[in-house]
Image 1: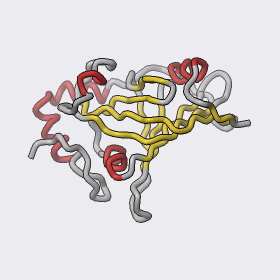
Image 2: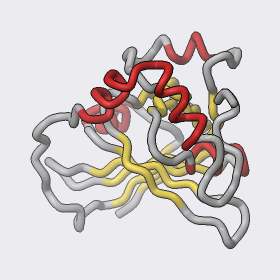
Image 3: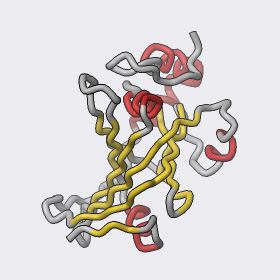
Image 4: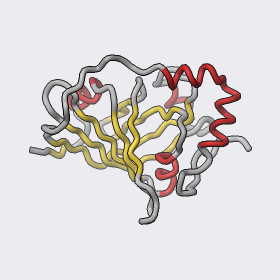
Amino acid sequence: MGKVYDGIDDQLAGFIGRQHVFFVGTAPTGPQGHLNVSPKGLDTFRILGPHTVAYLDLTGSGIETVAHLRDNGRITIMFCAFKGRPLIVRLYGRGRVVEPGDGEWDHLIAGFPDYPGVRSVVVVDVERVADSCGYAVPLYEFKGERSQLIAYAENKGPEAMEDYKARKNRESIDGLPGLRGVRD
């Protein structure tokens, strides 16, 4: 049923490129912390090579993924087929957070749309690529992207978004450090 791949090949890249949503799973090192699973959408995912991917991290109410990556780097990204042939693809690896002002920022951000409210780019060195059947994943019809997150950031404006990140994205719900680049 399931298969492990040497890396992200053209067939897997095509499958990933057709998906409208992906899920990111992370957890802190300690057993008391909260595991986090976060859905992602919009045009925010890029395959940089057979063993490297990146996604654009837009401002949200929490900062769990960033905090967990700073804590231990562990991350799993999952894609599910909601139409066509059933399939689940998981990318297991070590992630890192690149914020505005970091050395890689200009190069990485150039590969993404100019969305308002961007807070970082998450880069993942993929250690394992595996699929599974997806037989129990339901069929859904894609109706379109939601516009609320982009509209929210545009309406608030850059200054208010920076204030929001300073209040909401400085640390995780478990008290782990989040964004470095937020102002005091």
